[in-house]
Length: 175
Image 1 (cartoon, rainbow, N blue to C red):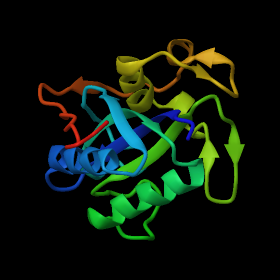
Image 2: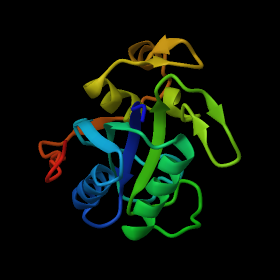
Image 3: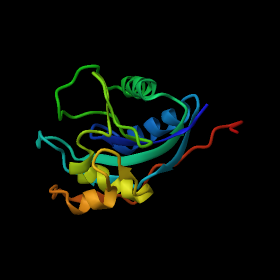
Image 4: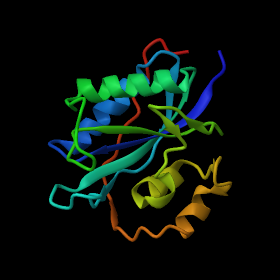
């Protein structure tokens, strides 16, 4: 099966935020045909939209997977639900966990349930900066690197890099 390089944005602003992010990464690593290759630093960030809520902890996970985009999305939604996120929630509301597919190889995809690259990737420091911790890929629709997108980004929110981060747990009997 062909392997695909994918970047997933992770975020949490309810409860034990770092713990929720670690749990999400651990569960992503257990997905069939998937290997977590890296995790960015974790940043404390200001909430978008509804400002009367806790700050988010955000980061980006790099993985290789044989899962198709829609199946990966489905698996991410299952992980969110298992960690306590309800099916329906208001936009920009507080959340235990948020998993968003940012980039999937150089794919541009638009379906009823999934848009790749993530439609707001280019205008959010809390995605661009952690993504740069891992790589500087080309945005397949805008034909600019992540660094170029960051330099033109109008988002002026403040990110605070946390001292603690996420550990990548190796699978037992992994090949």
